[in-house]
Amino acid sequence: MSTVFYNLITLTGERDAVRAVCRDGRRPISGKLSKSIGIRRIDWSFEKLFQLHPALSGICGEPPRDEWHYGASAGTVSRWGRFSQARFRLEVKNYQIHEVLRPLSKFYPAVCFVNAESCLDDSTAMSAFAYRGRGVTWNPHVPQRNPC
Image (cartoon, rainbow, N blue to C red; front, side, top):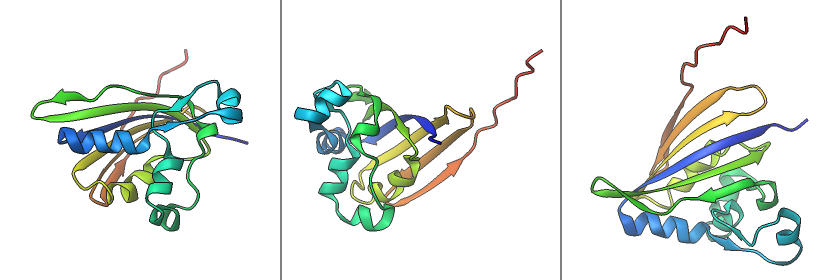
């Protein structure tokens, strides 16, 4: 059985640092993969980030595969106070992205990573923050709705 997770990831930091993470994660695709998933570019490819930073495989194991991303999309880098931020939305199957963000943040020490993750199968929610290899996760209190 597979589990699907919806993620909203926000990167915050100095404009050049945020743009570097976005650029590093962008992966043009062609051929069979492009036809099978129906797009020409992965806006933020964990496969490419793992290739750029091979130590991630030793920490996290196998990366989430690009063909398992559904509806991955990126917003533009925008101003946020005196900093900049970029947002990504993606769905992944059988992989919790917050487990990758903490080790990934070691390679981008000028950027904060925040993830809001929702399990589409059981409606649980989880949030995570990562910065310079450190981080925290928490489950926000979500009141249960009475179906009656």
